[in-house]
Image (cartoon, rainbow, N blue to C red):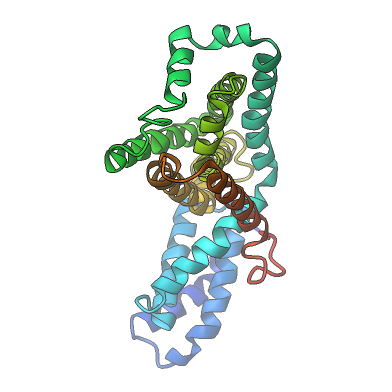
Length: 321
């Protein structure tokens, strides 16, 4: 159906809803039923790729109906919980193909480079300067005051540094995905190279292996997950630009941004959480490595279980779950 026919068929409905919202209608009690029909119109308009002007108008009209029927103040906390505990994981699962691609770009690169350096350690110098490798060894050496990237000294200052560093990496990965998706994959692969080389290099030395792994095991569950999800969201934006389908590129980008917004915010929250854990937990020398390993393993299980299982009850029968 062409857009002009669609507007002619449903224009009376939209006018009736506008009259109720503007208190010009003698039948305000009909709004719930009309709102359901309006939602169907909005879904059809987005599915068929009608003009952004039409979809924006229907979105605005639908929002006004929602505010009139349900209000906003009392629903905000519940809506936020619904958004983070349902929409975020469901969006991630709905884009599982991109998630697999992002994970392969990071983990496969890290594994390949890690094995290469493990069996042929001289290859580490092909990717990192000797001074960088020696600096890593010194940071994680026994008795180091500044364990890892800051240790317990100046936790608050290091917390701010970790936020700036981690969020900037995640943002660059997400933003790079807009350009066709490939820059996001390159960013993930680059970070995988760094992790694989450093982890393998430090693991070969018995003096540094325990300090390194006990330091990264906990916060990496949030940091790496946030990075991978940032790349996945960026790739979806880039694919919307490359293959908009029946929609215009602008409309496809707007639709993709709305779909990926919970993922981008969820990834940012994971990254901030990683910075907090890294500054106040991972760098603490007062906590034994055994406890860090146990807590770190629990965090990895919790993150994976959340993304796999969260939101399935409320989303029963939904394609997103």
